[in-house]
Amino acid sequence: MSLSLHEASIPVYLQMLRNLLAIVDKAEAHARAEAKDPNTYADVRLIEDMLPFNRQIHMASDAAKNGAARLSGQTPPSFPDVETTFPELRERIEKTIAFVESVKPEQVNGREDATIELPMPNRTIKFSGRDFLLKFSLPNFFFHVTMAYALLRQQGVPLGKLDYLAGAFPVEELA
Image 1 (cartoon, rainbow, N blue to C red):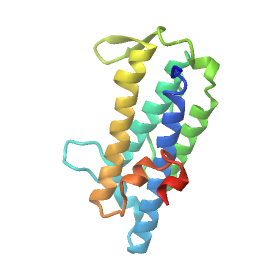
Image 2: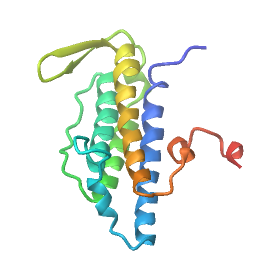
Image 3: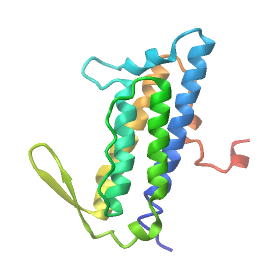
Image 4: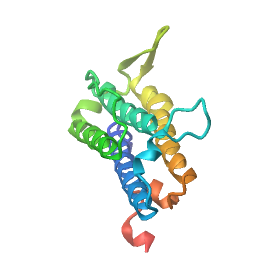
């Protein structure tokens, strides 16, 4: 049995976006329990030249929506990167989930060898659909989700590996 391009992309983006939403919720609850404003997390960085937490959310959102759009032959929707508060970041993730959910298997499957062009500042990179997903889109998406997770851990939010992987295992295996 082979794995379809849709199965390798859309459910993966959705699982991790939902996990990211749960991580944001957990961070907000932790901040409130510590009598802190959760929005202070928006600007945290691991190091000066790194994008802050809110930009990691923007980039994870962009990676998922742009990946889903390009894999399905659509123009990616434009979301301005203006969210800085936890409610705004949550809304951004929810909007991304809604778009990714709208991408159907028949829009993606069969596009493994389609040419996907990725505009960059100095050039355009061309990929097959398969290579775009496996060598660019998913690694980029996981990078930004992981950075968001790490930034919250650095701030003392009690997150563990299962918060990152939530949904990857049947519930009975976690009991």
